[in-house]
Amino acid sequence: MLKARYSKKGIVLLCTIAYFASYFSRKTFAVVMVEMLENGVIEREIAGVVGTALFVFYGAGQLISGYLGDRISPRYLMFSGLMVSALCNLLLPLVPNQYLMIPIWAINGFAQALLWPPIVRILSDNLSHEKYVSASLIVTCGAHVSTIVLYILAPICISFMSWKSVFFISTIFCVVVGVIFLVAMCFILKSDKSEELEEKASVEHDSVHIFKTFWESGVIWIFICIIAMGFMRDGIESWLPTLYSEAFGRDSSESILVSVALPIFSIISIFVVRTIHKGRVFNNEVMGSGILFGISVVLCIPLAILINTESAIARVICLALAGLVCACMHACNFLLISCVPGRFAKTGRASTIGGLCNACTYIGAASSMYGIALVSKHLGWSATACSWIGICALGIIFCVVAFKKYTRFLHHE
Image (cartoon, rainbow, N blue to C red):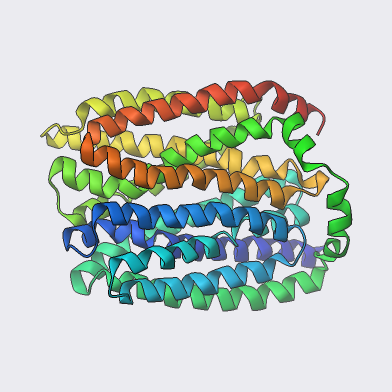
């Protein structure tokens, strides 16, 4: 029993470290993008396309990763993802042409997709649903801590070396983590035989009609809520340094550094939501997400009004409001991406649903990268914030549509 308990803790720890490395190697471009724009390394529209390429291929890759994650060893998928991501981070700062950054970062997006669905599979196969939710919280927070480290590290690297060094550090880190993860996970999973279900996976999965599950659980409407959440979450995270720099006339290093507030807000919000997840309201992930979308609408209204106001107080308030909106979206992400797929563990579809949910996240994220680039350039940042109000309202609408079916699904779980 003691050995099994420590094996489960080891699995959670390894998944957290792997996801930490994954986020670190995924966010590098978004974090240093403002510096690349200022130095004329890349044009705004091309930067938007590079970010969009990552999200599009990440989203498409989720479908493949989710399918494979329920059928073959997830540890090998995760190792492959980390190694390919390391290679992409090595190549991007070395290419002589900004257009070549697009396919490289698209490949990185696909590599990143090989992480989350296998993590869902590993955790849901080895833990009860309650412990799975707690483990998902830890893994998710690992990603936010990674973002904090990157936001602090990038300005230092830019000041003493260059923006390219951020990518090189990410490359080394991914390789080291990938090797440690594969060796340690092979030992742990072999010792407790937790992957025995793999031999029976395809037979069990084929017994469940996936499209019927979509309709009866209401998850098909949840997918649209997730798209709205992805647009808001990744759009704000990716463009806040640029917004802060352009709207308030600050330099790139300061703009990157102040963005460290976003993951801090997000970690706090996730812990709060996890704490109240056992309650009647937030235990229903759709209801909880609808409330979070509503709060975001309220927060975006003063944000749209105060942007471009030449005042230090307005600058601080806008940063706080953007952080709170992003925090709400990360809390929503925790409910819809971490908790919802675990509800499908008994049907043998946890990885598949996890992959589809994450794919929808990055449909929204891909739309936000290029969409925000266009709106901010032609209409300004105030109009951009107004568009966020409409996206959150869309999330509320489809939470309402999904609520009845998903509630019924929970009662029959």
